[in-house]
Length: 179
Image 1 (cartoon, helix red, strand yellow):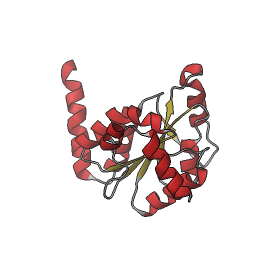
Image 2 (cartoon, rainbow, N blue to C red; image 1 turned 45 degrees about the vertical axis):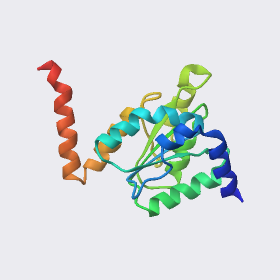
Image 3 (cartoon, rainbow, N blue to C red; image 1 turned 60 degrees about the horizontal axis):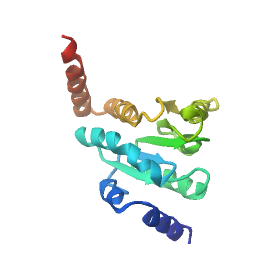
């Protein structure tokens, strides 16, 4: 029953163009990208483009650490078993999504605080970065899904020579205007 509710919630709350642009899953995703609300999926455009440029399969989900904690935890366990190597979790306000993910996996978790209606995202930043000892969450700047993508790529490149070469080539292009 819970799963049907969740699917119904996503179908009713996601604009049809978002469903087309953000497939809910890809085959063998190395990166799982979670946001705390379907409304936050639009913030993933830059991240999605970067991961596609580096030819990295990713899965995109809207899950809430507060509204559907059981589904969130079940998803993390399933993604762990299915080969996810890095999680990226973005949430605003209380921003407990990255911490919830980190509590249920030993894989790297990158937290992205999302700017909300109050405090310009500082509440989310502090909630994401203040993790207890032993349960780390690497945290990037507010709304910085692009840097989360690059950090995830760096993590994956530790064990992937081809990806490391792509990353080196990208970094050389960044330096060109300064040479």
